[in-house]
Length: 203
Image (cartoon, rainbow, N blue to C red; front, side, top):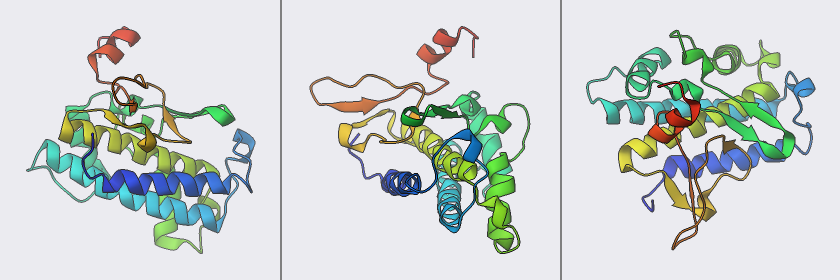
């Protein structure tokens, strides 16, 4: 995949910014509620980009899809990718894992990092200083990665990038192989036939 990937380039910047934060806040579960202005900035930027990427994905799937809120995007995305909510990510260096879209499994509910993090920061950052948490920052960057992997699969029918584009902090749980004539990075989506077969759940 050598198309222009502006959303992915943005994700990579956010991933690096998040990693820099780890110099000051150790990424362990006991620190998930630690909050800072730096996390606030990351959450705001990541979630704004999620809205842009979800809009692009929804319109790519269905040009008549409703645009404007997370719920409308959820309907379109889950219709196309019923297992989207399963997308899981790990930070192997820190033994952490996240499933940022889990709330989309059975209901049209906003994820907690969106509702309690992004929305409160966006509407009243000063009044909600505790909303800009480490947990919300990692979750929002992971959530953006999930949307982009589906967006590029749908638009380009490919899940492969040059190796230099691979994530360096947050990795999808279902990764493909690295290799071939050109060193590259690839991944599986939860709705891929092979991923479904591995789970043995029929979908």
